[in-house]
Structure formats: C-alpha cells, structure tokens
Length: 104
Image 1 (cartoon, helix red, strand yellow):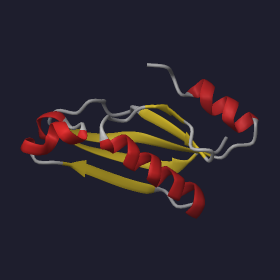
Image 2 (tube, one colour):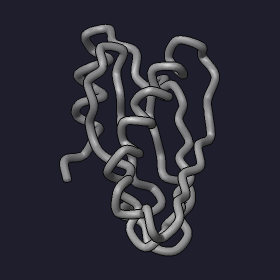
Image 3 (cartoon, one colour):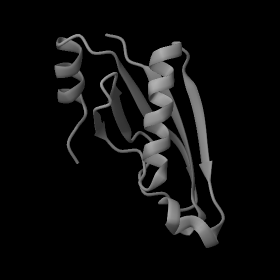
C-alpha cells in the first residue's frame, strides 16, 4: 500500500488542511493492524486505509468534521459475526481509530 506521507506533503504544500486517522486498537480479526493510517484533506481526497467496507466512509466523514470543528475524535467500530462481512470487519472484529488534524 502506498505510504500517505507523500500525499500529505503534497496536500499541505498546496495549502490543504489534512486529518490523519490511525488504527489504535484491534480485537479479534481486523483488516488492518494498529498503526495503519489514512489521510483525508479538506477537498475530500483520501490516501491510505484503516479498514475496508463502510468503515472507510465513516472515517472520511468524521475526518471532515474534525477539520471543521478542530476537535480530535476516537472512533470504535465493532459488529456481530453475522454482519461482519457486509461492513468490512471479517470475523466480528473491532477496531478503534483516532482521527486528528495534522500539523507540521
């Protein structure tokens, strides 16, 4: 997977504000390990990944809120085994994602 660093540098160089989402915890099976990152700029461009399925979309929405409101957020995603594949969290995994505005 492409590293987000190059995109974040390019975005901030052109004056974009950027939010960084980081997987800070996982339980059971999860598509991405702790430390996985995703960047979202104020134009709605995305780089990297923290999971898959609808989790990515939810994180992008929260990243936009973080950029508007200036307050970091800790998100928790968990789902029952029977619905896990539908939202991209196989085997009933749970993930915690911290979203904050990037500053150099």
